Image (tube, rainbow, N blue to C red; front, top):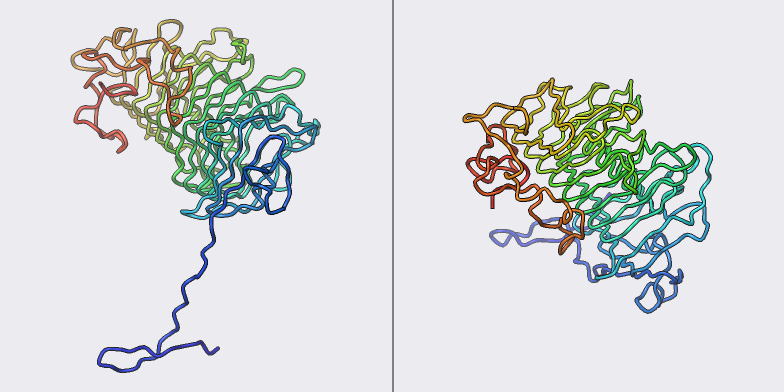
Length: 476
């Protein structure tokens, strides 16, 4: 094929033949903003989707948006009027450096409420796919470089928000997922992240009150956050809170089928809080929910997938029904974990065998190359047990009985913490969605948590001082 060429003036004035450069684009695509509001109207007129004439539904706006565009949701409740399926966003999305943003109008709270959804209640008939959202208020499927900010998703029949397919660059920030799972006992997860995608981020989100539903519900699948990403790097889970979910707060169990040999590539799990999981919203203990703060691995029996391999730093776990931090690797396939500068307070609250096995502050029994360092287990009541059979342990401390040996010996007491009162920690977030600041589980100056950590093997994210402190917070 003959290509167009032009003559170029070369060194010495010689005329050289070369390829024709593409002319510059005269009109780059302008980024657009689309607006939604409860009571809006879906349409394609020139004024539809404007602040004066907003759309009614997110799928309608999403189908018209592209890379670099923004969809703005005004505050209020978005319901479904008895429809059988929630909002499905499939395909499309953004590009690297040009995400498609879905965000709340500043100062307002859009609430996507699934209480009036009416999906099929047959066994496994309300699950989502690329063609239906099923019993979820909102589903993202094959949505690369989509960033979601400031939304609340509640009262979903089968769960809250479900992300699946291929979704590199997906981000959820400053969102809330609560009280989902009333249809049956199959799921009930607040935010579920599945499929694959590099660079996924879940930051400064809350998940609470998620549960199982229907007659005889156990809530044994209803986690706050459930993340299972195959062959995906750069996953960040940071600054989130999970509480009173009937199963676990954070669950990184691999959901891959037995024949799927792909692996879960480790996540960075940094500065999250998980408390009172394994409980119902009313504070009663859920009889069958596991109730772990952080479940860091797991796979189906007979599965081939690898799992675990996470870096778990600066997290707080307290008052959970069972374990604070659990490698959950008994089914095999676990990769070594890096578990540093985390705190467990009064975990393993269950003492009734009918409610499940007694738990531990930290339980790591499945990989000899897992490393635990600078962690703290403290209890003012109940069990403060640890179970470490396979792991490297460095400078971990608990009260009551020794964990690792220190010279001179350290005696951990309540006075080593600025506060053990979690009232502020349960309260409103700070500016920009940051976790609320208080003295809760922060070290006191001059206490035994200060300056007694180790740098040996310390993850790079924590290399901020010559002699690190114990626990989740530095001195100051």
